[in-house]
Image (cartoon, rainbow, N blue to C red; front, side, top):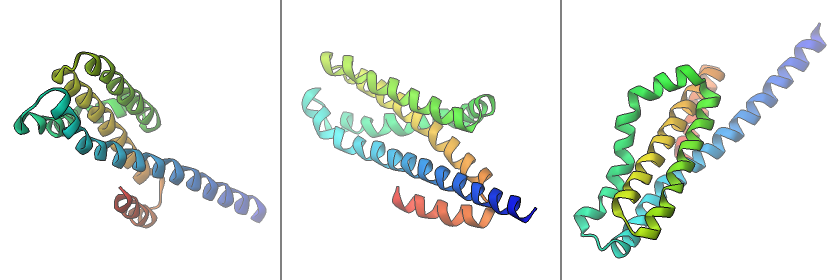
Length: 154
């Protein structure tokens, strides 16, 4: 009986370690994608001949998707589950990235903004599912400590 308990505790620690590595990689993606928005502004100003006011719509388009997806993301995650929600979020981000191809070929600022909005929506969906999965799958005290460290890395 004691052997079974030890084996299951060891398996649970391995499961936590795998989860933490996946979630850590996703936090890196969150930070990297968010950081890329700032670097896009000068390039889009040149490519699309934008004013400063127009250029800051790059950041606005990305973050306004968080506002529009706040309520629907809870419904989506309720329907798909947290793990499938992460996969769906990555897929949505990939679609948003693919929108950049025709936007770059035609130098259409509206298409760039659409791609950024879609990427932001996917990122919010991933963020929401990761935070929820993380908090539900860990003991409370460990969750808070580790989540704070990941937030610092982001």
